[in-house]
Image (cartoon, rainbow, N blue to C red):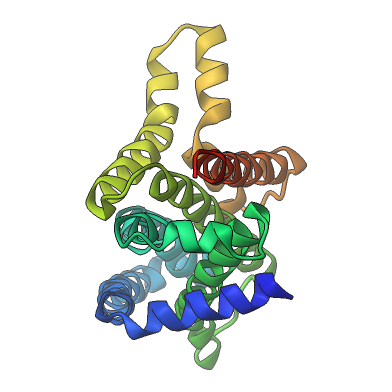
Length: 252
């Protein structure tokens, strides 16, 4: 239960920060603009689509590109949300108090992680409302949309886990944000580097790429290998965060 108490405290702390509200507003504004641009594109294509035997629908032309663009926007934004999770405690010299409290390091890490996930879940619900609003004027491929939203949720959880770990390494939030963005960008472009490498190395690089596994879910293909990749990614960085805090506890 202490995990959920800490998660609720972290969520309240996020909403007390102007940064969280600014992030929500800016992300919604940018994505709403992209969403309307895709709808306009669909309206322009509609006369030609009606002449095809199997035309692409609203989900393919509007929802899937929106979710793809959302991942790029959040690649820039999530490091700003994760940078203060633990680094702020370290900088404010409250980390010693936190790790000496009757909480395990696992509870501390999970509490902070779940608090951030709750915030990202609210953001995801607002994003999902855009494609769902298309039901007012047409039909949607719910299977494809659900796979895309699942991919985006797993991607956000992965961003948050890596950002939490980077925040645990330093007392400077800015350093944590830049490090998180650099690491995420590197993992993102591994897919591109894989296209230039030899066949054996290419397979490894593509297997490690966040983009490759997310794109697979965006096509509607829910593969257990993609789910396992995201689960292992999240677990690895949460365990590393716990180990880092455990090291701090032993030093104190």
